[in-house]
Length: 84
Image (tube, rainbow, N blue to C red; front, side):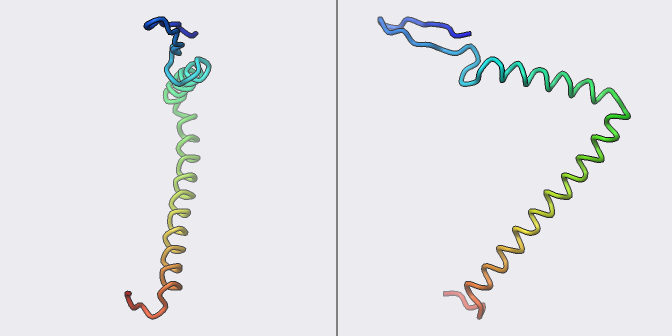
């Protein structure tokens, strides 16, 4: 829903949900409601935790790879270890 506001003869349109579309906000509400239902179900939470742990490991692995790549790049750019 858009609201028209008159200011000094100019009409400006202002969205009801700021820069977001109504369907986006409604979808977020649905996601939060579903999350609350999942949190109440112990069996579902067991599997959610398993999946979250796998993703956490993948994220930390990616971070480790990035750190190692940075270290290698620094060594390649300065092979003698001398600072400029």
